[in-house]
Length: 168
Image (cartoon, rainbow, N blue to C red; front, side, top):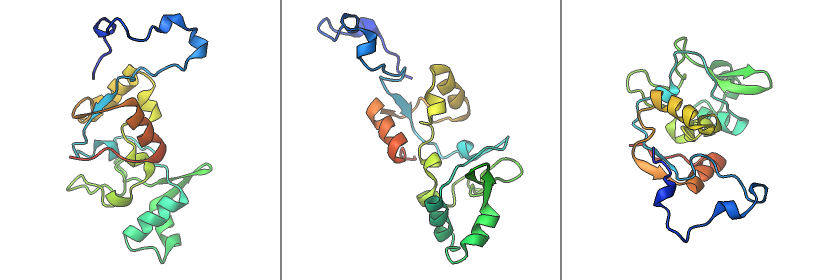
């Protein structure tokens, strides 16, 4: 991961000490960007523990259409969706793998219509809370800290719009 080195700044760079910190927005620790390149390993879709792949109705309908169940949405939801409080999540296999992760290829069988949560990995807010949290994500994701450097602005667009980083 690129590190910010204040000694490399030129003398006419912005002096943040000349302005009260209350008057300027605080930039996140990853303001210099983060590198990521999907390796297609499927680790982000895997156990060992059960997790949640949050879905909304539009995503449910898109996935149902992708697998040819658009005419029986109730059956699709009984088979592939579970209620978690007021929210909804895709179900997993007993080993914690997403129901749409192909166990042989480790690829997503609904990749073109995967939920926003999947499209925005690894740039989840929980992973971006601190360098330590990013480091934890990188332990299970071989694509973190490798490949393309995403700017702060690009990361924001990915988070806001669900535009996903490209896969290799």
